Length: 462
Image 1 (cartoon, rainbow, N blue to C red):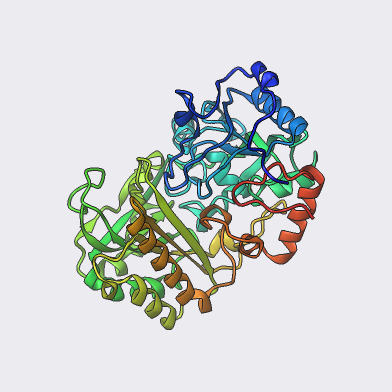
Image 2 (cartoon, rainbow, N blue to C red):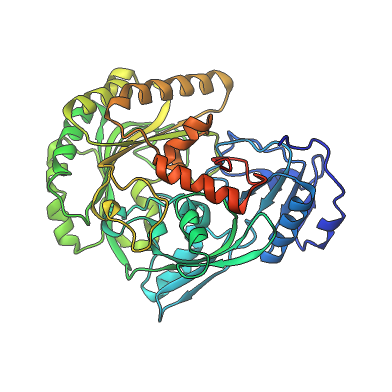
């Protein structure tokens, strides 16, 4: 179905409590712009939803007019420009309610992890956040949610108890293991292919503090640090979570001194247990090579942004990922040939990382879901910043070279949240096993037979 270039009558959208804007109107840019500025959205109409009723009204209108629909909360995962159709912005829906008795949080569609941390911390609780608390909870969780403490506690999707979701027919549904279990399955790891989640209920963990940060060496020591880290990952307990990265940090004020403008090899660690035990466990990393900057310390869980120090301001980014079956010496050599010191200080990727998987990430969820990364032992991801066309092309070429070179060590799959710009159907399908992808297509044909939710990493109805 081709997206309409001229929108039908918008009268029905007048019932929406939030703004309804068209191209050329003053508030349009604010409504459609997300965190990733590489994808500039140009929908025919955008609404700023203030609650579930607005999402229901918008979806019913889209269903009646056969208008394709996209949804955006923070836009961290905006890897695909939305053209034409309707964009539902949920960023105003930020309510978080914590029940310390049941250790759960009810989280609205536009809430960020920072909102959850602020609400949960007074109770000594925390959620399974990723590497940035600025990211939205719902979009992250629908893609499975790969947490900083994933090896210790599993995927964020594993802790979800229920969803409130508007399906493409405009009905508001409650989904949990007993009510609409197939919908519940598809929402945990299947991204936003079967509906627009207006809120979710998830378990929280008693995690007031953790031991974490980064051990930084100058990039000339990347090979030594990587080999030490890779061997070390075979010996550590499941609760030790870590990532090796090569960082080329720009000289901008957002990056603290002395890291600003530097070329680094880093191992970031997160340990939820006793700090003294964590300190003993990471001693081999501190002894592997001369440490230039060491930020590992005990911290409040709500401060975990200090571990990976991801950008907090919007920027144009090209991200990509690959699940790895293992990390033999040949794979480490190939990785460093592509992104290490030999590639030069002007190499265009800002960061290239190898994350230790396994532990709780390898164990099945208590309730079956669509997450397909449990067999990976490592996870490779990269980010390049693309401020202008020449740099953008260099980032694209470097990304392709890296993933082509590392393909022999991969499982053949990706994770949907960090997959990057989706390509053809074969490329989109790489986020799942063939069996799970077929099941998602079947569920898509049940809940969205007209393929209204066709933007981003979308599967087609069977």
